[in-house]
Amino acid sequence: MSQSQDCQVEACEIQSCIQRNNYDESKCQSQIFALYKCCLNMYQTAEKEGTNPPESSACPLKEIVERRMKRFEK
Image (cartoon, rainbow, N blue to C red; front, side, top):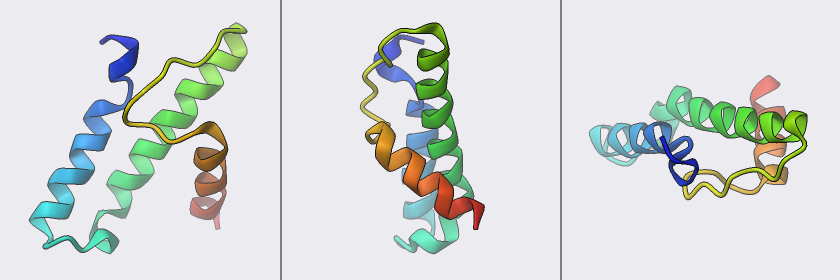
């Protein structure tokens, strides 16, 4: 998978879930969590390797991902 496609599968899963559930995002929290987890892993891997993270059309900025993951932990 090319770098620009990182976490694209997870993003598509969110869209499918939301459509199946009449746009009720609350019923798709596990898919949303999976996307943010994928994005966080992408950013952490780049940090460990000392490289710039790939640009992903599916992932929000790193700061947003980190903030959202903290909310999931609560």
